[in-house]
Structure formats: C-alpha cells, structure tokens
Image (cartoon, rainbow, N blue to C red; front, side, top):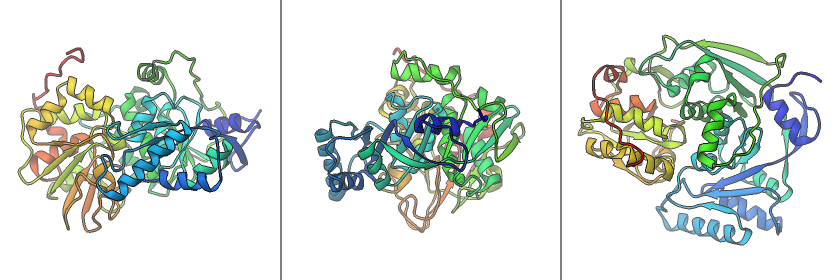
Length: 431
C-alpha cells in the first residue's frame, strides 16, 4: 500500500477506503461540537432538517459570552440549554471554560479521531493526534443529521523544529516565528505535521498552543506526535484506561514541503497589528505603550502559561496605566491555579480575574478596549475589531511577554525577569 501521511491515514480509516492527497471522500464523524457563537444556527438547521435523533456525538459549550452580557445572548444560551435537554447532549454551561480546553479535558478527543467543530480553532486537538477542523454551522448540522461529511484530503507539509529552547522563550514564540516565516496563507487547506526534538521535549500545554494557531497560517488540520506525554495527559484528565493509538506517518510518506527551523537563538516574539504574520522581536517594540494586557484564551490560558506569568508578576505590581485581565481556560485550570497560589499572586499584582471563557479575546465582554487603545494579549488573532473595537491595536505574545509588559506599561522582552530571583513558592495541590 502507498505510504501515507497522518491526515491520509485518519481520513482513510473513516471513509472505508485508501485515500491520498487530493481525493474526495465521505467520512464518518466521531465527535462534533458548537459554541454559543455558532450553535444557534446549528439548532435552526437541525430543526429545518426535521432531525429526530443526532447521528454523531455532540456537545455545546457556552464560552464566548459567559456569563451572558446581554438579553440577546441570554436567549441564545437558553436555546442551547433547551436543545441539549431535548436531544440529551452534553452541555458545558457558563464557568466551565473555553471549548478547546474543556472538550479535551472531557475525554471527547482521542488520537485518530475525526472531529468537526463550529469554531475555527478546532485544529487545537491535533495536539492529541486527532484530525480536527473547523466548519460552518450548516456543515456541522449536516454531520449531526447524517453522521458523516465530505472531505478533500489535504496535502501535508512537515515542520521539523530543532535546537534547544532558550530561556524566556515559549511555544507561543515558536509558532509566531513560524507563522511569520510561512505567512498567513502558507498552509492554506493543508495538513501540518510537527516533529523534531523541540516538539518532543515540549509539555502538553505548549503543544496545544502550537496546534491552536495552525489555522492562522491557513491549515485545515495539524498533528503533533502521540507519545508518552500525550497518553499520560489523556489518562490523567479523562481517567480512561482505554488503549490509545499512536498514529504516525509512514516513513516514505509524501509531503508537499518540509521545513526545518532551529530555534536555539530565538528571542521572544510579538505579532503586531493587524495580522498574525506581522511578527517582530519583543525587544524591538519597547517604545510601544500599552493600555491593556490579557492573559488567557484557548491559546494560552493553561496552567503552564499561568506559571510563567506568575514568575514575573510575583511580588510586583502592574503598571497603574495598565488593565491586566486574566481568564483561566477552564474551571479545572482555575481550581489548580488557586491551589498552586497563582491566583493570589495575580490579584496581589493588581490583575482582574474573570470567569473561565473567551470574553475579551472575541470582544464580547470583560475587557473591550476603548478607542485607540493598545492591547497585548496571549490570544491567537489580532485583526481589526477582534477584541470588540476596530480602532484598537492588538499585539500578540507569550504569557511571559504579556506579564512583563503589564508591569512596565510598554511591550517588554521578559527574559530579564527570568534572570532575577523572583520565583514564587507554588503551594502543593494537596493544600
């Protein structure tokens, strides 16, 4: 049989026939979901199709506007709750967190799965070896009514990350650097396979960050090798003792392109307005004054992200000219951050902690900038209006860079803070 990439293998397994890049196929869907910005249309389409029973596992997550900031949003939330009761689906209500954190935590994502989400950052689950991709609400409704959907098998590019991670540099810096090199259309409708020693040594939170931002260079889906870290993470979060597949590409699989990056000398990176691929070194932007800093999102709202920020914020105060807003990516993350003493560090530094969810990232509530204000955020997008005000300017960076910038009031290279003895004492999770 012809050697296959990971994308070709997963789509073949779900179509019942051997597929290659460029082929079209109807594939069985393992799991699908919607969030409160997309589920209303899904529900309407299901009603129009007169579906009595959903043909694939489905859940909804109330995260983009949670708790509700308006009457209209409250109606959407009620509509979702009512639908969930009628169709007996899983619902993650307000406070549960961001879909791309709570869904993996819930055990709905396994290596080799084929997942559709009515959210563009569904590619995040490639960190767990799933073929996961975002689709429109109508396409998702079709999948729910039939249990299947059509796919064009994407070509695959391979990205090898070599070197040793420099101090003060994180997964966010790596993916921003790569997007800056390949540009926002560098992987349009392609699958991406990451590998190399840097990826192998990276913790799971970092891998989620990498996978989350693949859509920002146009990728249909992306994959990070399933290894012992992946399996340990899944078992610890889900409690499942099932046998997990380690899906890998065949040795002679055909790639459209292979890129190699050595990040040994990489410096903290920042994505400048108004495009993610508009990238520069943080140190070169030290004269850019900020008004707001946001730490959270499905890209960087996890425990390792909070630990990095806490090392910088511990026993220090946020600049009086800066609003620092922090949103845990899930209730589980929030509780762990509390037990570790991270939330106390943030509050004492002057940060505001908001409910787990998307909020400021998508500009629905909890931190919409004023006219002309400058924001530095750990989010994944910075186009005009992304945070709710088209006249604002959004810079994207790692949690460490965001924390350091919140202290100085200007975009700040965080590396100097890691050379100072300011490491917080993290409480035991048994506390």
